[in-house]
Image (cartoon, rainbow, N blue to C red):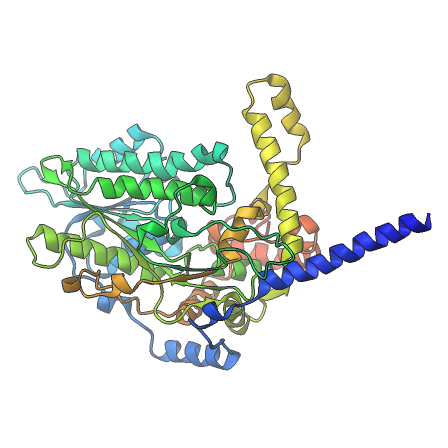
Length: 520
């Protein structure tokens, strides 16, 4: 008995020591990453920046490319696409010459009021080729057979963000929208003679998957610091090297868009290009990162020391309009380099930040928002259990045998934001990702987009918090589904109960609907 207890005690001790060792390896900020941004944010700097923005707001309208008078089809308008529409209207485009294609109607107040309320909405699943064709070919309200019809630009931002899946067998779940849906958009665009198509790709297509269970002789994971630019040689060549199926499917969509450049489009020529946002896009309107933190309030983290580039959504929308402007210049016979069929990485002005910088910013601007440190090794272990359950249920449900499909019902269904906590999440948020957008910032005469996003990451945080409070702290549905709440631990139950009545009243008053489990 004594020897058995000694063995158990030894196992417990070794496990504890390994967890401490692994945590240290996953939590460090290496000098090669620190060199890109040696200074951390402080509450004083955050407050100072917020006060400056409040007294002298940055007006994106003043730096937008000029009005074109073209027609616009925006595919996907829940978050980034919605901001593209806002910027089109800000520069004077006619709302009756803009249409939205999306799986659900916009819920954001800024897209349901004012000029934006005049923008036509078509409910479309882009994986359905006929539905996409019908929406593209629908008559425009400003049509006049006696006039020359305006040319059309398409901004394609829609995506299926199943970044928690990495198994090759599940790739069709992502590629159905991100690749096949994109091809449907390209085909529909050609059918009506679209001349410009700008696609939202992702900087994450170049992120290399790593291994986070360290051997005793390893100090940190492989590919722990990744510097990513427009070089296509950085893009993984094998499926198992992509961080998840999301990235593996987005590169297929990007290739389809780039290959379509210069192809026939009705009686015209289609010019295309891709914007690769450098990792997380955040901002007002429903992001999965900072907005989700604000909505959730009580957050858990294991990546405080991880440094990454972020993209504020208004900067990202601006980059799309800049690319359109460059393609139109070329079509008019301009002398600048032809940028058709290319892909440009973009990120915020200023240095990258650590997640701890994000936390300092949000807790200073919104003191009710908190972040609790967790062991990265513990979370990694939990994520692998969740993945086993998720894959087991998925494969059983995919089986052709009725008995196996029946067995799937005995495996817990992973629901809510818990589904995000799978190993592929670590491959995206537990590595230092530095994105270089210097090529996009070059002037057009030197082969760049002339992109200069006016907002730093901190300024974007200030705008996000400001709009969050203006909206009554309710947030968009996509924000509510982002991140990890750890509700499966039951840690938030009492906090939810205390906040529920207050939140229900706030949602009911603002949306005129009954609030049901708005915190879930």
